Image (cartoon, rainbow over all chains, first blue to last red; front, side):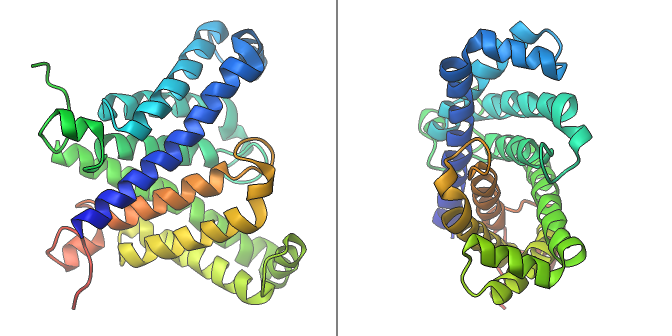
Length: 139
Length: 138
């Protein structure tokens, strides 16, 4: 049963991580950071240029680290903060489901935080640090 | 740390469960079963009427069970299969992100699976059965 639980967590990390990677990549490569900042400004995101950098880096690098299972609790919180911002600043006025709704960022945010604190055995954290929770406590 | 993990699991179960409840409720209450079946038919879902009933029931009841943490492994697998069907039949041709993409159903499906097998301490399963995994082995 433990193996099944770890496998479900690995599948969760890969699925959710890939979605974040795609969004981070889109901000860097497709929109560009200027384009992302301009779009953030139109949506009313505060400090749009800084926010664009934060979102792009956290989504691209954080998504990759979530897949690999490195520094999971930190990555989970950074991704959740990213989605919390998107939820309150952009999507909440559109309701939960339907066009522009909050459901996607809500699902990604809660999944990031839960997988950050529950990464399972198939994570590099677990190989690097022996504790189950995998918080690096600075050797 | 264990408490933080359990709180994170509870938050995720509530968040993901609420999304499923909203979709199940929408199918029952807003679209209606015939409306959902007609829309499924248009999307190319096989056995649209049966599929509409299954999707609505699994999403509404499964979402509620995910929130309270009851029968989690069964509920997680059923919700993941529901999302797998939506992914393969409806959303895959639209790519991962962007309009009609499969990111939402992928996120909901893998999250259901992960939470179904890792519900944490704040779940009815845990109150009913002592084992950590929360599987009812009767």
